[in-house]
Image (cartoon, rainbow, N blue to C red; front, side, top):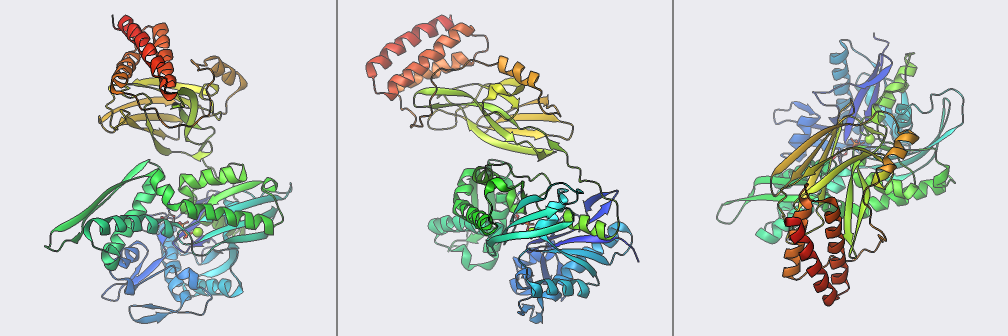
Length: 584
Ligand code: ADP
Ligand code: MG
């Protein structure tokens, strides 16, 4: 028998298995995927389905399929699957056996020993049931490990010899459960100081919110409630999850569902709906806000303040939603870590523990991360003033590479035909205080909004060698420009910072924080501003003249903002003169 020991994350939604190889934990793929959906089913012929196939069957025949059995572990309740009764341990054992088989295929030998993780709040009967599930699957369960402890181990915490005890808050938002744990690691000794959370909150709820929105809209348009048709609803739910996952890296996603229903005359009906990230985040914001209460509850129970924490770790697939990172950063006033794949961290940590049990040498997990944030400069036009030199990061520091992120931006002047894309690296919210990596012009923009502005998508793709590909896409004009630049692999030196500060571009005095609505111009003024914007977009325009033109444009906006028509008119005359000069 092999002396290897498997690390297993037996999750509510997904499970994973990992092992130490060459001193590092690795996820073992199951059926070509890193995660195995924790779903078990029987096909119509009575054949066993585990994982993706079972998950797919759930959409067609729920009565032959079992999901989220982890919730029932240790409860004494049983489940029905295709008319037969099973204990939760038996269903879990099907999952564990599948993981064990995948490991055997991958390693070329059967491994029977395992460390299996459970939530920190699992009680004795629940832990016992997990051990039994392992035994039914033919595994010798060496250790039951708390999930937050596993996550901390994946990050290499708690394995350092000596040193100060480390207080770690683990925020785990998965598919159907949400747990906050505060643990204290002191060498080999781990204490769970507090746990809080919600056993019925997770990615499924986010999918549900989005699916409900689409179903409501469909019902309004066609008087058909898709929720009444199990199959249609399952398709809608799955499409909602796909869109949700897409929205974690791109600013908008489209749900496309053909033949989702048919009307009274039997004609097919479809759903085609674009969802923007902001809209999605708005749908789930109350749920995400609620998770902050659990953090506070755990802190109170542990008798700690946010400032007492040494680390904050994000675990669970749902923490990939960008809003989660922002919320926690703001609430705890520190940047959480999520550079180890949040849905693999628990399995990787279980493998570390398994390696310790098996007497393996283990190195710290190597993750390639970008050591600083990468983003672009933006400007806003508010309250009659332009505020520029803002840095908006697209890829935050400590993000694992390779990575791809995109965001949507819009132009600031109606009719604006070009934008100057400036790419920076650094942590300052003032763009010019960061290091300029490169810049380029994007012109021939086609306004696609009623206010004359154009929406563009900026996409950053960073590879493991630090090569950054920046692509700007004008959705309406269907134009796309890409530039490649090199991001440095080290943190910035003070000289770099001084140098980039010296590059401080044109700034506008008295920029203030007022956040008033956009100004509405009368058509003549609007046309004039458009003409001016075109002139400014011309790279050959004399810089001094361009400066005068933009000053007058700003003055016009200010005057319009204040409702001073006379001043608007005067300034427009000035602008006309300047434009003549420029167009000569
Ligand atoms: P669990 O621990 O509950 O078994 P996971 O940690 O694997 O589950 O999380 C699964 C959930 O994470 C699912 O709801 C899935 O849709 C969600 N998820 C996975 N990837 C992303 C992503 N990129 N953005 C948003 N949600 C995601
Ligand atoms: Mg989990």
